[in-house]
Length: 122
Image (cartoon, rainbow, N blue to C red):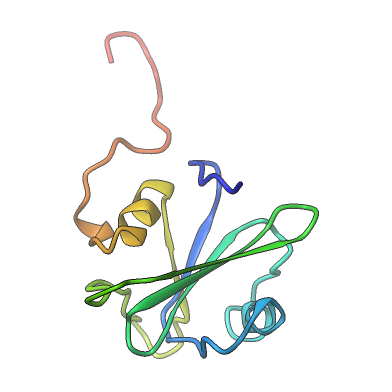
């Protein structure tokens, strides 16, 4: 079972992926397009062209998990847009990824920061 924790890094690919690709094809996409090591333990998130499905690729130290969610109706309304032509991915927090997986808009959520300084009076 995979659990998404605040300590995990989530990287969301901006461009849609070919969903005929399996683990090896998406791992290659991580290396060649996202310029990241697929074995680093990050959660790599991809969307299909129609915005009806999401795939997440995660390496847990023993092997890869490939999680696929396809909506029974509708589309994922939010997906990151590149701020420049060279931007290929964006990061999300664990809370934002949970919202995205529920077909919500992760940029409109208000969650407590992942880390905050604890001090007297504060």
